[in-house]
Length: 248
Image (cartoon, rainbow, N blue to C red; front, side, top):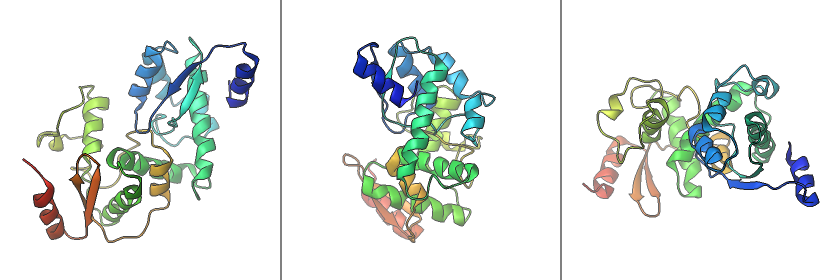
C-alpha cells in the first residue's frame, strides 16, 4: 500500500490506521520494537526482512548495502494492524527515495555514492543536536576521512554495543569499549563504517551531501543541555576546549 492508497483509505473511512512517528536516528531494531509494540508486525520478522538482501526491494531500489539500515526514512506513518512486513518496509523505503529528492544533488547520485553519503549522514545524525552544527560536524568527518584519520565517533561504538553485540545502551563509553575489534569502531579503523548506523533525516542527509569546506578536525561538546559544540582546527586547540568544557 503506497501513500496514495493510504490517503484513499483514510478519506473513505474503510480502514482504521495506526499512526506511528519514527524520529531521526533510530536503527532497524528500534523501529522493529516500535512496530511490534503497536501490533503492526513482529519485530523479529521486520529485522530479518530488512537484512534479507535477496528481497526484491534491494534490486528494485538499487540498495548498495547489505541491509536497509539508513533507508527507512524517519517520518509519521499510517500502518494497519497485522500488515505484512513487506508492505510496512516498502512504505518507509519508498518514502526515503521520495524525500531525498528535496536534498540538493542527492537523488542524482549513483547507488554507491548514495550509500556512502547515507553512511556519513547516519553518523552525523547521531552526533548533532543543533541543526546549524550538522554541516560543521560533517565537515570534520570529511576532513578526517580525506587525511586517513579515524572519525573517533562514540556513536559508532554505541552501535556496536547495542546493535551488533545486543547489549543495553551504555551510560557512558569506557576505554575498553574504544578497543573493540570491529570495523564499525571508528576509534580503531579510519574512514567510514561499513554501512549506516542509523536512519537519518533530511538535516543530516543534506549536511553529508552538501558539506561545507572548513578547516575543522575536532569538535567538543560545550553545552550538554543545549547540545552545543565548539570546533577546532588543531589538536592543541581541541585539548584546550576539552579541558575547558569536560567535567569529571
